[in-house]
Image (cartoon, rainbow, N blue to C red; front, side, top):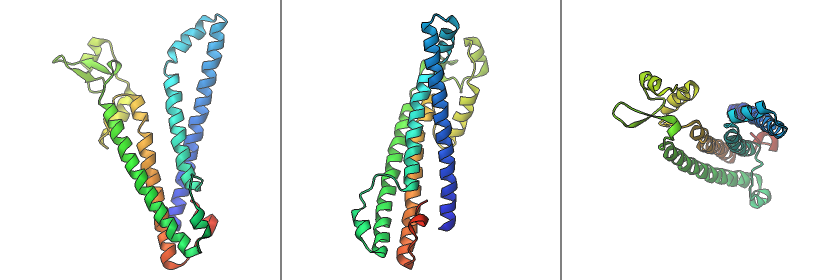
Length: 225
């Protein structure tokens, strides 16, 4: 289990780096928005034009908050600083403490797994609706997604494919997730982090079970991560 903890530690560092990057980007975008609005109030015409081009900013800040919340939740489970009722484990002898830890972690893992599954199905349901800005009229007068439209149809409609999103969409289709918009794709962080927390809890349950069976109890520092 020492190698598992080492891998988990490296992954937690990656989660922390992503969360810090998202936070810094959110601060930069929010600060830019605020500065541009103040300049708009001072009758700077160019500031208003830039603000119009930053119509994506509010959506980015909303989804960024969602990402920060779930990366924070995952890091809390890594550091074992999530909300827990641990009266019995504190009072129990070392071996019984490992048994209780295993039971609680298994329950938490199953709960996270089913929450992840529910949110996964919810995101897939949201992805079925294709908004007008991501759809185009096909040859047989049916609306098709802009990423699936032939180049000739896009050229006639004066549209172009959002290459980055279409590449991401193609990649997610491998997992059975056909996303309709970038906003819906960003919602995948919810089921993904629930499943990841489920894996983290089950690894803790296995470690506690092994400690219970072998009667080798880790120190408090070794038990974390």
